Image (cartoon, rainbow, N blue to C red; front, top):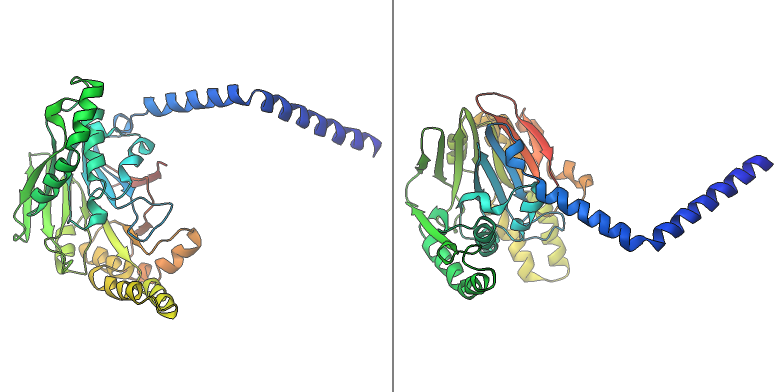
Length: 358
């Protein structure tokens, strides 16, 4: 017992000494940690490490209902080495560094519709792409008719900032001709439209029902035998299963109507009629997890990933409640999306792997 006592005393003394040393040199330790972290982050190039194929990163999986673990809705699609972004929800551009991709690599953006939560970080995204890549031409932004007004507004709002960046960093770093975005509108009246088809990559838009929000679309990407379909915001519609037919991955928005109903009742109880009315309204133009699963089954997709999560699901303990009934409607994998999720689909194969990047 006496030996054990002295061993414990020695361990405590050594621990205290180590703590004192660490406290004495905490500035130096912090400096080293910071330098190592920066070096690792700057040297990371996810695209170079990926196999040829189609890759999807859930950059932001949140909604206007706050969730500290999720940025606003945004998705990256990588076809080979080509990088595309679908929507630019609040704060989502700040996740680029955490997933190991430079915004300077973005080839184009595709907007599903013009609700504020899907476009409110577009200005930041265009800015990061411009200075991050030294581009001499604006960022192409595809969208249904009306995208011209959106891009014109962001370009006007950021015009003075563009001048400041060039004046400060110089035209080599921030070429004046590369600032902002260029609208690439397509027919919003067409049920579907091919936007890119170059032999390897095909990108198609398709109309969805997000009434009274019109126009609203989803997108399908096909590359070397692999495919992903993304719904955007929508109520259940036959167009989604038709567009997603045979896709490897379906990225669908999702709203749990039961949970929103609980929130509605809560607002009614405290007599907040305005927010109670909003909670009453929003289920009619969004898809539930069960409906998304039914569509995935009908379309014959392999994996269903849910994004634009409504309401917030800040703890895994709520996941089963949020997904209640979905697995009964779809035999494939159902993934409740988190920011930084990567889905990898190697070219001309059948495997879909998943990992968390952040």
